[in-house]
Amino acid sequence: MSENATPVAPVQNIVHTPGPWEAYHVSSAGWSVRMAAPREGHDRPDPICSMAWWQFDKPGIIDNDISGANAKLIAASPDLLAALQKFVKWHDMDHETMTGVEVQKAYDQAIEEAKSALHKVV
Image (cartoon, rainbow, N blue to C red; front, side):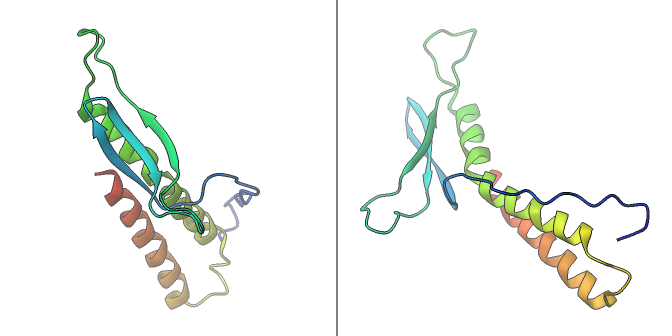
């Protein structure tokens, strides 16, 4: 880390339903987000949330494109959080004492995790 860089405090005690999550289209009633796999001892994935984006100019009509985009973004959030935490870890590494290969490898891993998480949103 350079002498002018401010270390980022690690995020502690984040409590949320563990990922990965997935978005799925329920029906014309909107979208939902659930765990990607059932927890041990359960026969189906737990729900995270459901949503419907109502068109304000057309009462009673749901915009499934916006609902789906929101659901995909929410479903990607555990992966996006993990990628961001990797970047923070990379930022706080002691780049002065590490080899260029070590720094590049950590950076590449953070980039790949971020790309993978962003791919879920699209």
